[in-house]
Image (spheres, rainbow over the protein chains, first blue to last red):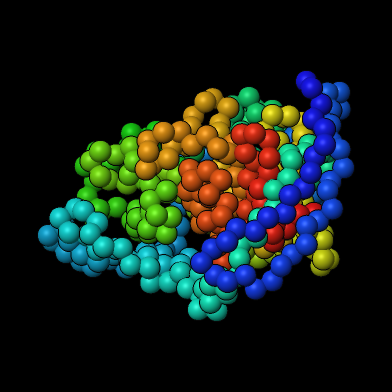
Length: 172
Length: 241
């Protein structure tokens, strides 16, 4: 693999419809980086659950379920014609409640109403009118680091899942 | 779901039943939502064998959420794109939602310092060292070097979801063109809700590089993307370690 050299950190702003309110000076360029060909893998081959006294692991949800109904505060309009309004569970998030209400007519959803949505915060939308979304562009790096978990798109691989399971089995 | 879910609980004294309840919930979601199970509610709904008013409240909620997400993302989150009969296919958001619900179960059982990882969709609460200011360190997988990560994030009380090109060649498709989205290989969203982070990551990935701009304009959400030409684009407020 040919090492890549001369990485430069670019700092650029994307102009929206808002006026420019502040100007940011560019950061200093990053140092040269190379892609290592011989570095040893991190423990757990890229993903591991850190061991802790109370750590447990759950396997893939593919076995037959022991049914346990999740508690629900949803309400349902009683109807004989297949139509009605249905209110979903109110889900608590850190910034507020999310709750959806749908209208069904003859088996089709004809309307969806958000009864509650966390970004429905007038202060937030006011801020986004005046602030530019600032993005940072850099060359892709590769690192080893102590981490508790990995997030990645390649997790659907069966091979990865088997490997991770065997690592988790050792932790427990 | 075919997804590995792991629970890392750091509070001492959280009963084992907390994990068992969360796992039971995941099995239940799989039973009701999996399109790979013939007799799941979603499969039966999609075949017209189950009427909407007979479906469970969660299933209805998710169907409604899919419609709302299509509006929020200008159609880039499109649960209907493979359904010529117009019924939504909710599976794009179910994984994030199910893992988030599992985290709420742990909270309900008294856990306050934990990390739940459902195949790369992650919810964090509190600290890996309870009572301290330490944050959970989460690595975003490097797209080509399997034993490496591209960036380390340090978070607490945040959700992390990553969307991208899968190993087996499945592609996220731009619903507006029908073509595979090729500008990005990986896109990570950090936010307060895993359900929305998961859906937004999927939608933004389909938008390509513009998806990061779109995410930058959303309040309370940060993003990290890896392009197919080895650049990274991230929002300024990304919680890097």
